[in-house]
Amino acid sequence: MTLRMDVIWHNAPEFLSGLANTIWLCGVSMLLSLVLGALFLGVLTSRRRQLRVAAQTFVDAGRCVPFLLLTYIVYFALPAVGIVLDKWTAALGTLVLYNTAYMAEILRAGWLSLPSGQTQSARAFGYSGFLLLRRIILPQILIAVGPVIGNQLIQLIKDSAFLSIITIPELTFVANEVQSYYFIPFESFLVATLMYWLLCSGIEWLVRRGEKWASLVRRNHA
Amino acid sequence: MPDDTQVVPALELRGVSKLFGDHEVLARIDLRVMPGETVCLLGPSGSGKTTLLRCINWLETPDGGVILLRGKRVGVRQTHDGILPMHDRELAAIRTRIGMVFQHFNLWPHLTALGNVIESPIHVLRRPRREVVHEAEYLLEKVGLSDKRDVYPAYLSGGQMQRVAIARALAMRPEVLLFDEPTSALDPELVGEVLTVMKDLAHEGMTMIVVTHEMQFARDAASRIVFLDKGRVIEEAAADEFFERPKTERSRQFLERYNR
Image (cartoon, rainbow over all chains, first blue to last red; front, top):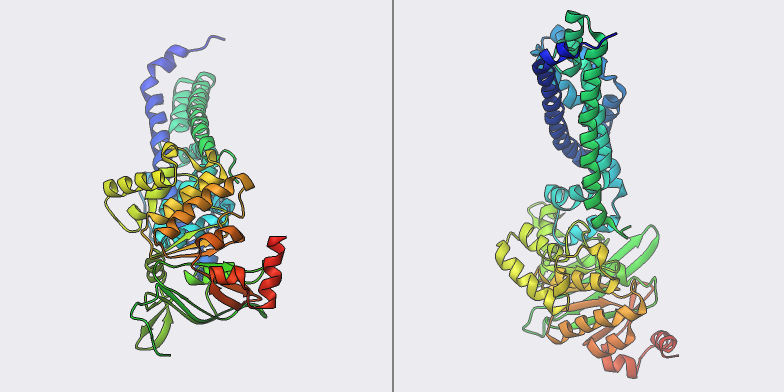
């Protein structure tokens, strides 16, 4: 068997644009769900019980629905009740919805790991509400859970392959298109796999860099 | 009660009480601190000293009594409907006027020494950054830590952390400074450096309330001693008076343990 890498090379622009779509979809939805997750953290740790329960229910539900099913719901089921989204909005929306539930839970775990003296000293200095979250709590949480967020991003990138089901031209979709057109499944999927691997290795490298800096802050610290 | 002084007390407590369940931690505590005074709260552990301190800035909500900061009530506000608890934001505004130094320092680990000192003046008081940094550098020099300016708390010793914590509290220009057993978590050889800074502050006329077990410090720096036991003020006297001629049996016993 000879590998038809020339065909792959010929289709390099398609692969690269698929990769680019995967990257921006996951990058943008990660940033959005970090912001939303932080807002959720405010609600999850709220003193109002009903708010807390409602948020927790959403988060728990979000983490129990398979990503593929969620994609079906957003793209195929919502139009049945009158909500029609174009496929890009549906894709981004699904990613954000799904990932926000995870981010909220990860941030909450980080919040629980903070020593209680931290919030207390901040309150004594006049911090409250959003300022307390933004200046004192979130930075410490992000240092604590940075690697977990990195892992979640990798997870998200892999899950985003399911978006090919609604014909989003991301990396997996492109690889499938190319292989079925030229009948080169081995080469096509191999290249896609390599691209995912490179992307995820890059993220792991960034996480390790971040960890080095975080260990400066953390040394000796309970 | 007629007011016999023209000066408004920096801080005044009237009948402050606190319950933990059925247990009365504070029983109608009265306390008056005039501007420039250093009051040391002494007493055996469990006597309510720390709780009293934490009631002053409402980190602990008192169950009864009145707390006045320069004559203005802390923690509650007068409305048409009567007296209501303060909103978070009002409480936060009042807390900026009461500095606090904690037993376990509670520095913010994600910020450097300088970062810790400038953080609240910039983000809570919204003072201009340049001015704040300038003042913070002066304060770090005052506590002898200019060279640690850019160091994260994890790389400081306990004594250094506590001195940064003092600079951090001073940067807010508080009207009253509360110390909650500031040297109890320190190795013995590090206690001195923190007490030296505190003594200087006391002599400079900072208004301070200090919960401590350091009798020598209380003797040297306090203008007044308030001795608590089981949530009550047992004795209140000038520092010399208290250490030379304690009036109650309970305070004599207490002091004896330290003199042995």
